Length: 396
Image (cartoon, rainbow, N blue to C red; front, side, top):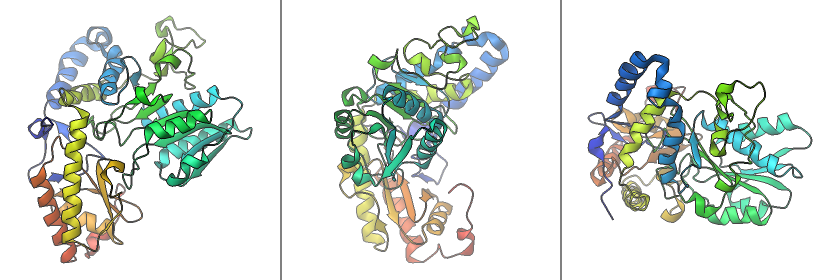
């Protein structure tokens, strides 16, 4: 295994152990200078000419190839832009269109709520008997029946870190004649993914977590190459047009993955992500995975020894767990606020999950032990039982 630690390439506040990269990755040190250049040399000096001279228009595809490398996608099959919810909608709508004789989207109750909201909105718009059917995660396999149009799953559960078997689930969907859509929000940059080998039709994901693209960083969508010229994007935006600057009043979809573009790319955010992706140069996801598991196993062992009242909510088998570890505690929100105030940053997910992310690019064994010491202090001495820690913030 090659060394994947890149801690010197990140801005990490002094005295902070950051275990929340599964919510928002830290800033790579080279990003501020890149953004300053885009603002001062490109936007300020080139003005509108930056779209051509600075290559702004090509960024969604070029950055898409960088992201695609980390998720096993062929060049030219991933494009960036918009938000993850928008990309979920596009993938679902395109998938449904591919199975016009069917009316059901199947997902699970462990899916991220926004994905389910987008599906609810889509079936509500379509009417005509369309429905979203949700089952428990462990019931998905036996629920993929021949009336399913699209199976939509998030590979890594955002609360527990449980991992769906991508090849197996995709095969089950295909055997039943359904289209497969994967959400890789907690997979991209966290675990090895091979979209090409899975043969799934669509995949989507965000880039502000493990890919460190910054708050509001653009999402991505993958379309299997053999479908790229026929998939209907549903959101037929200007920049998904075959010739946007012909200003045709009627939509003609662009070539290949380009048709999945919708609105004007967010140049500053795209530049930040493009720069952040350089951290991954020379990094093998198999090595990242091995290092991540080692950190997680150390964390679980040390927490369970130090704080037995915390209940492991993540799968104990590391092969079925993503790059996070979650523990249950009745007063998890207050406990997490107390831990954060003492320099260990994780987060809370209702109703009782204390969640910790493990990114070996900037975390090491010493960080894990130091974090456990803080958690032990907070729990053993009931430091969380202070009214100030029980006041809920808007973002948990």
